[in-house]
Length: 300
Image: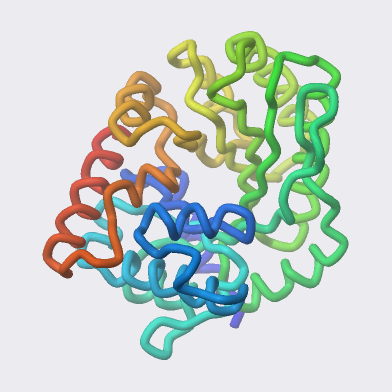
């Protein structure tokens, strides 16, 4: 069932002003084997995609049902489409997140990255997006996330990435959801600082051009220059600016994030660092709780 306006407002306020971070639980087809291997589930443990997604669902359910996965330190969680359609203890995952954990549900909607051109990777086409958004609204999803990648400081490439993100973002906003715009800058780029300056300018121009009342969030790589994106966080169209960990270790990502007072975390790999399928519940919950605590403190 679609979220009623009072709940939507409650969720909006939590994301806009709450203390905490957004957990990214949205690894999809390409990144799933890697995520599972880091978790101790090797490729010989499953023989097809259905079994692989079954294993990642078990991993995500264990995270979501852990005692520290709650609204004390976590504002939202980004889900993969198959996770949105799944259930925990018989309750649909988006409903479970909000009603049991107090955590706002988001959905990853992109279909992966196109081949690199002009120093960037655009998103692949999403011909079925409207149907997916309709399902998301019906499932009680609050917002969405979609990722592109900037690999170098190429002005034309960065302009096209940001234009595509905002074009799709408007489509999402019209469906009643709050889009998270995510043009990631590769942390290994030799022109990362220059790319970030160009990116900031393009995002500002697109924010200024949004129709009155349209709200978006931004998910950005932690910038080399601390506070670079503060003015974007203050833009009236921006609900929140969140940071991706981008391959930094948890400690490094948290140290960098804590230099940016107007960004909060939306970490994926850093959230699950050190977790293993074979751990006892006590060890697992302690390790996850420690990661949640570190990421929360860096987001304050």
